[in-house]
Length: 100
Image 1 (spheres, rainbow, N blue to C red):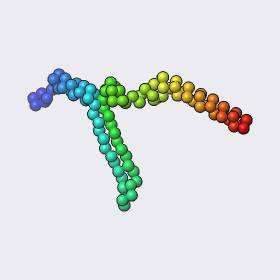
Image 2: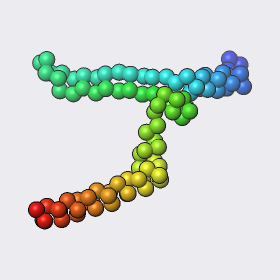
Image 3: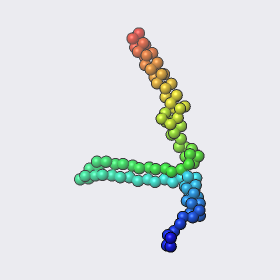
Image 4: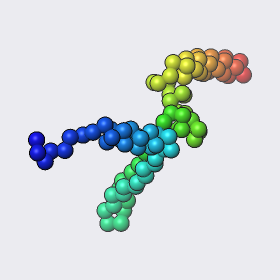
């Protein structure tokens, strides 16, 4: 056991503190990848990663999970209502077009 370093609760606390700070403040990682051949751009990939707590994200105006039908039952319901209304509008437009 000599020479081995045992993790301590101090290290775990420091890691928890760092994680709490990152989630509280938020961190952005950004980068661009471009693949070119003979000065012709073939692929351009833009990477944007935000790591933050839900509260911080909402404070920044980011709330896409509330409107994503795969993540929110309310958004799923709204999406279904939208489809019904679009179908109804299409039927009405067809009828009006047939009258003209």
